[in-house]
Image 1: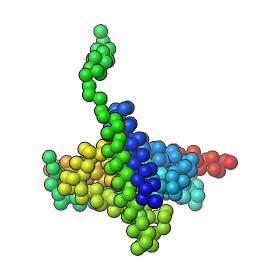
Image 2: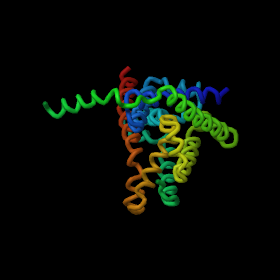
Image 3: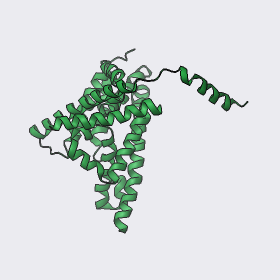
Image 4: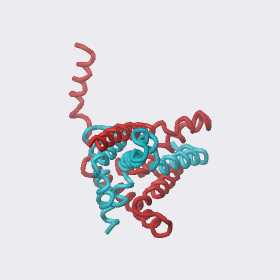
Length: 116
Length: 151
């Protein structure tokens, strides 16, 4: 059942992105950046957490969860340190994603040859 | 007639000649690819929750890292581009699309050297996501925290 909801919700988020590309002629880069901002906005109102509880990976795998995690880390740190905490905690939860993207991206670029 | 008006007129003229994208088929493909990537993510989350000490909230981190590793390797061997051509937004919106943007930008500039080519261009495409994410999270965080302290 978890897998079904992950498929349905994750796929639906991608369809929204596809519609933005096809109908509003946005580039994929514009779609992903707007989705990150959207994820942060939804988390600002506490909506995204409910979506994660409901859909699991269907909500954590799309890039919207990146914005959600940024704000989440910032708010958790703001609880402790006040306004300065926002800057301190902003990358706390997304650290795994960003550092692994840097590491694996770098290593793959070293090892493989460009195609095409 | 000014240059801008001419441009607009031209855009109007060629509009009926441009092929319309097959909306429904594109959406179905995006749904299928995006949904499947999320199902793989769900399986990874379950795996990390069962065999390692992660709970529902923290399991997203190793899952994202694993998906990024898979997507970086698939980009390196040239498979992710084919998935991208088929799936459109279905492959760009999940976190794997972020990894693909990082890796493909680095690979593309490999010939310029390790420092000036790979390392400099690593975030050429994906940097926008981090910039907009951090700026928006900062602003929303400020607003939300200000509300919280004032109320």
